[in-house]
Image 1 (tube, helix red, strand yellow):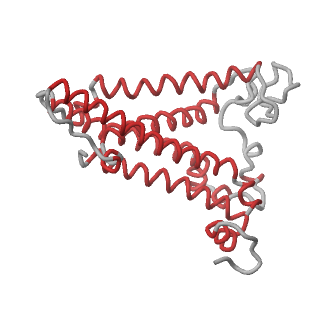
Image 2 (tube, helix red, strand yellow):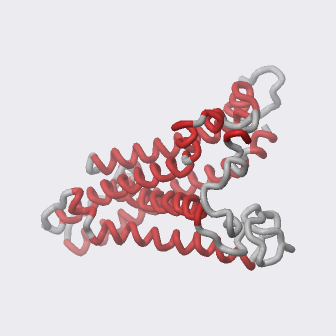
Image 3 (cartoon, rainbow over the protein chains, first blue to last red):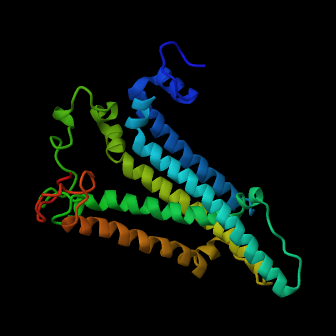
Length: 52
Length: 230
């Protein structure tokens, strides 16, 4: 599941490294945090607005 | 793999702690909700309407408990970022030096004639894009704070009206809930702790040290030294 030349590691980490390189990993963390925040806020806003 | 984890270790550690704590809060909150519901029903001689864990995590009770903490954290950091532009604390590594208050010069901010070849694109752009990028951290923190405060208000409103219906009281409009004691009690109980904690951070770091932490002055640094990190 990993590209040639990659050392063993979880598939997602190998994929990130293959796709974006080490400098792109900062961007991956940035986007991950933004996605967690936006997904959480969307989820909890919908719960409140739909009177669960 | 090792290099990736090491270079992102701070954000990975906090993301892991966040997810573990959120899961723990969901399980503990679910037990607490069902315990209270059971005791309530026993006192009233009724059958308790307990919830499954899956139902609890999509309840207004859980949504309010999470978002009331989120909003206060983002308010805290937004204010800290904003106030440290103009306010100083002598001796604190979290503060600028006296005389440096304000938005600072283009030279200090690597802008205008002082941009670097590797400066961010919008820092070189000028105009509205430079203004947006210059304030992007506070703009995003403020957006998340206001959004999570809104989520707290609608989930708290839903929760409050469920209580009111159960106790045969008239339900409130959203604006009515914004003026209620419940909304302000849940809001201010979080704000007060955040303001004390962030103020403590600014003041305790004058005299106290943590070797190796960028949040502290170096151990041997004099107490009167401001804006020097370890």
